[in-house]
Length: 389
View 1: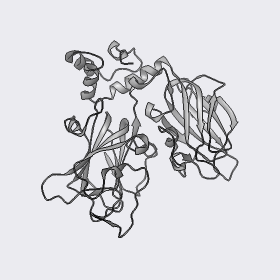
View 2: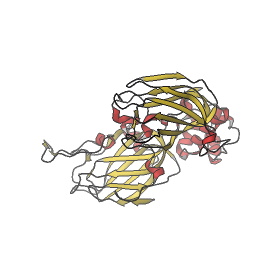
View 3: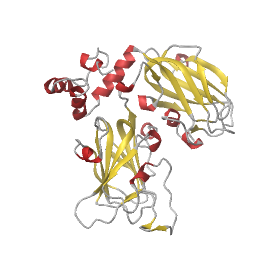
View 4: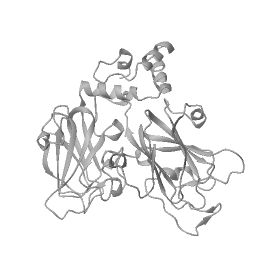
């Protein structure tokens, strides 16, 4: 684990990962032991925190964050967050913006993975694993911690030692899809299914990960928008599909982009199993350059259908887009990869719960199969796992 402060050199890989806890992706502040001064839900707001001096409510100065009362007994305060996108956590941002005399001296974070929809009392009994040990933070600062826990988590718990206020919690990571919820045709580019942005020409106004977020964009800021180009080039974004597969239909959505939508767009695909995506010759056209309308969801049946692991969207010359959907079928190898990756990265407690619950194994058989992990991704799935699909 490493710690960087607000102005430290950034890691392009980690900084490009989506915020698994964001309200945009379905994250929820499930519980807090105390929120007297400011509500826990503020932690997950997608927008940056704000502050208005001398704005008092009936409990004191109003803060855009989560703030607890001053503790007068031993212990610490904590909030439990359900991740909108369960996955592998790679970066934590504990943002204490505007908390200057009331921030916690230290914070820690734990993670757990559970089946179903537990209530706060049940979550208290879950097997929590330490992601970030108690670590010092500074006030009015984006405190950044790079972490590498090996497991896929569904919930995180932010602890303040002993009390205080935090404006925002960002949990950047790699979404890992639960294959039990994937049908034979699905959106191969959706973050919730395990896709990931691999390259982008420009992200001046907003992140390209927004293109692949769940649901509809509510405002222009929830899409991807580039700066205005002043040359003869064009902007683009590439995505590694959730699994190798064949894209059959595409949705190119420019909703909310009225004076700044691209004029045209095209799609191309690459199969990294056979060629290097860095080689321009490895890309094959899936949708030719096609005119777009502002503030419109365009749907296209692709004229070229070929297996791909990556897809690139080119917009001409620049502009913004709300969403990109790439509906298709995963290959047999791709489905096996989804199942194996998910099962290998479950914490032991959830792996046993899956096997003894839905798979119907006895405790001894479940323990034996769980102990065989990591299962090789290029081998046939154990029969017990194929029953889950």
